[in-house]
Amino acid sequence: LCRGDPFQIIAALAAVPQAEATLAGFAPGQRRDYLEWITAAKQAATREKRIAQAVEWLAEGKKRNWKYENC
Image (cartoon, helix red, strand yellow):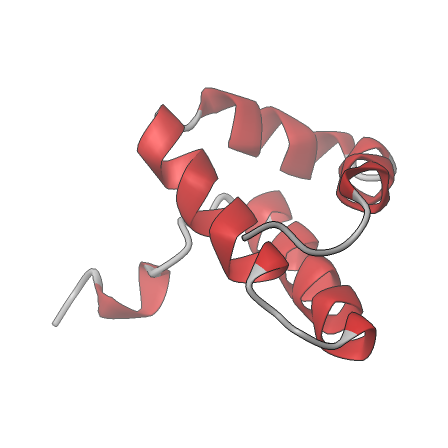
């Protein structure tokens, strides 16, 4: 199920080249993790919040589930 405008995600990534480069360097499954997390949101406000969060994490070079890497 894909919700939202994919161009909104593309535009947000294009505004932060480091985030775009990080996502491009990920394996397909890692890219899919981010995109599925964003598009799974039912409300537009939630999608916008997740896009902003994803761009921030990607700019820092973090994978989608980075919080659990050192558990």
